[in-house]
Image (cartoon, rainbow, N blue to C red; front, side, top):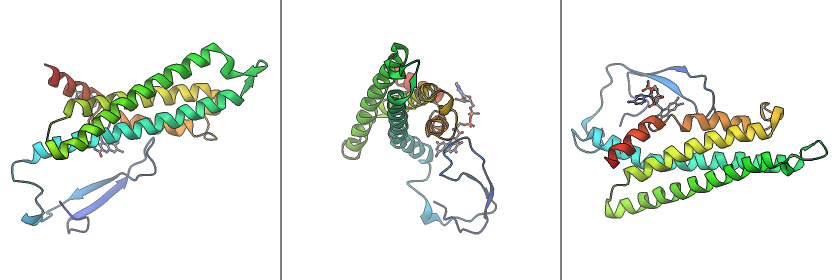
Length: 198
Ligand SMILES: Cc1cc2nc3c(=O)[nH]c(=O)nc-3n(C[C@H](O)[C@H](O)[C@H](O)COP(=O)(O)OP(=O)(O)OC[C@H]3O[C@@H](n4cnc5c(N)ncnc54)[C@H](O)[C@@H]3O)c2cc1C
């Protein structure tokens, strides 16, 4: 663990990001930084094992954030579809919109169950140390893919307004994208799952 005010650490440029803009992401440079031995986390040589375990712990949380984004986008889409009147009736009366909403709701429910399962196994891990790598990857992979699909469909349901900053759905879509990239990209999740299966 390296404290931020340790001599030799300097921040670089702040990244201009597509989404997740409430959280700053900045380059960091380390030059001749001296770290005391007592700052070592775990045992020497255990770094990769600890890093992998940390990813297992963090993936259900990324699943949970993805689920929250998807749920918010879904609720915005339902609400808008009930009030937006086109061709003499609310757009939610069209089967084309209803089928989109039904698919969104089904995927969100499936993502919720995977996230809850992974979170439950994570809680249990503190006591029984039973690995839950595959279930953590399922939750992160599926919930983040669902967040991307649902937010994109929410933008579609809001039509032109969905593409403007007047409504939040475009923000949800931008925020959802990073969920497929961090804590191991979704390609990497599929590799992790396949390794566990074979
Ligand atoms: C704002 C922000 C915050 C982040 N925070 C975190 C964080 O807190 N924790 C964290 O773990 N990560 C975080 N990341 C993600 C991390 O920084 C990397 O972007 C991510 O691990 C992917 O690495 P890369 O960008 O080098 O992509 P690359 O490794 O160059 O991959 C590029 C593409 O190739 C694919 N690819 C690479 N190898 C394979 C393969 N073997 N098979 C199939 N496809 C492959 C990738 O899936 C990806 O689509 C963050 C990223 C951003 C932008």
